Image (tube, rainbow, N blue to C red; front, side, top):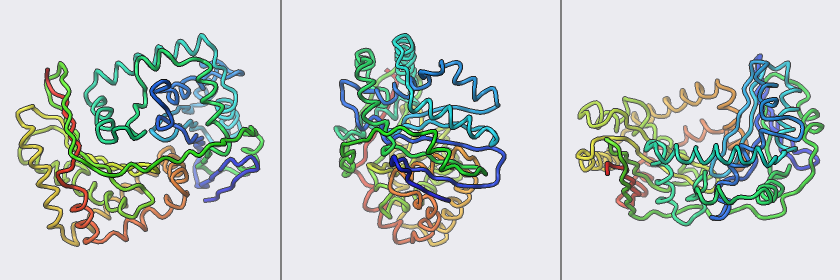
Length: 398
């Protein structure tokens, strides 16, 4: 794996591996954490709008990649926004040309702005109507409170209706700069640094400090929302260490033991033995400014007290783990990591994210850091974090 910072301060990473295809992903270090109530959802809005450029219509842009059998897409996370193409490697130059046009030449055509505004308003309604999706918006807000991580990725109906083209242009010009961007490429191609230097030649600079306080500290928080549904949807979780802290790898072990697959401890106790839920899982996320660990499931409202008791009991039972339990989790994580990164889109996203957090070497050293976790580490971290200071979200029948 090679990394180079170009003259315009754009970071470029190339993982050269044998493949007939290539994935190119551009990460812009901006997202909802840099928004306020007035412009809530603007990062996601711009993600949509960049698929029409001064040189290509929305349809032309997509067709240029899809006519080759390729994929072009984008997503907005809490901390960053990504655009990527996956194409046969012989079309590398075209893929870079299209992505460079997307990043450098937005049209902000008023007609397209209004079309995508309406699309996002429908997307907000869709998420709100679906409790499997909406519970995560509620959980983040309850867990992180006034910290920027509590900001909705979509903003609000009011903010989406009020964002102006001037707002869009100002946000774009502020954050879409080479020194605030990372490009990662996975594939068997040559001369990528020279090609990218020619294609991504913009020279604007980000001139502000984009560091924010790390989200830390837990306190007991419970929130219930009523909806016209039959099941009750639950999320129970905590703020946890960021990825540059060694305890984040401990939570990957805990996540695997408690929630990875149908044989995991929580699935076994709640689903297999008692039939209280169809699906039970956990989610452990560690990034640059935040981390969280959460258990999530859906069940009949009457089962919630029992389910909650089982979850907390399984947390306590982590004190009875053995060396064998931890080693089994490490093997599982290693296998999952290797299988997941066969997909070059998964790999390029992980590479970019780790470079965003601090350095792509975090990706390279991931399994090494997992292997360093001891049984005592797991017991100590579980005792420190998995206690009564949880955040609990319930969406239940009105």
